Length: 95
Image (spheres, rainbow, N blue to C red):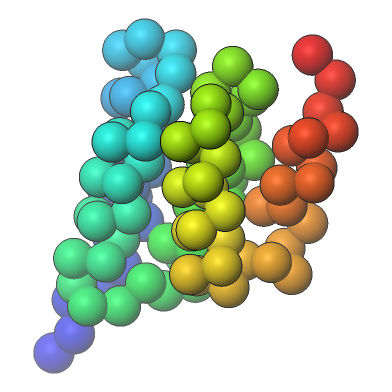
């Protein structure tokens, strides 16, 4: 039997990271993705959580390393068609 989705654990880990210091770094984002992949499948609920996390990042969160990681994840998990995960939207965001 396949394990259930890990979207709740991903969401909690992101919440805990943001609560700790108000930011999310590349290492924390990688941990969140690892949680989603731990059951061998990155399902739609886990993609939705990842999209929500990406869409909540601010320019302060997005140094060059984080930009590269976000771009990698958008392509890896085929999030390009989701407007909320679009890097272009993040670039146009007002401060």
